Length: 294
Image (cartoon, one colour):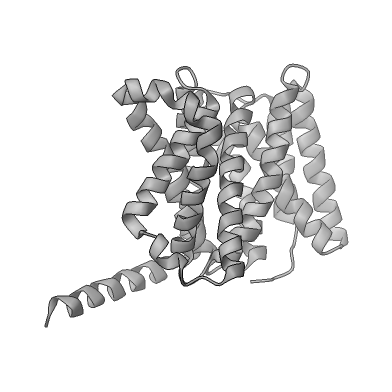
């Protein structure tokens, strides 16, 4: 048995192992790291501005994908529409990550997490007009109203960033499903390289402190791996096997994950009003039902 045959057998075994893991397990991993990474990023804000942290996150993730997948080899095999999709996703990732960090600089992680998931609910409600989806939208909007009413007097700009991030998160879900499936992680790698190119002009200046302090640089790389490599790869593994409706339904656990991680890592203790608002958002996301588009 030659080396080429051994490599193929090992690759097939790895694929089988990936397929044997339930897609919901990948989603849970994504849910944890979706906010665990940003919670560590918040700790860097004392030394590096949010756009600098976002730039470090995206650039380090792009380097990991470049070394791991060498995705440019795959780019030539894409059709023109597929190239536009991965390029658009790259720009969206750069904008979404930057806005998210600008938002959590001013607002609790749990609040930003709850606002982030208004988008999927609205997308479902607009796509399929039903009593259930209308009720879901009303409940979720009520929850976000409570959240924003709590602190809007002090940090209105934070809510602008949070709602802009929400809009880009919807586009991420749509484009993420389009690239999922066979070769999805390679397409994601291309998008991350494009995201790095898009993020450099707006964040490179703020990364300067990291390049004069090894600890900060390593922390920024750690944030990139935990925020943009692990969750986005597990998102792809889940999206490839879950219908969009099911994936959207599972999003109901993410505001709760944001609250739990914000409390455990950042000691951001939610008030009763904030807990009520977050709870309504979770109920709204869980209530909504989208068309099963695959």
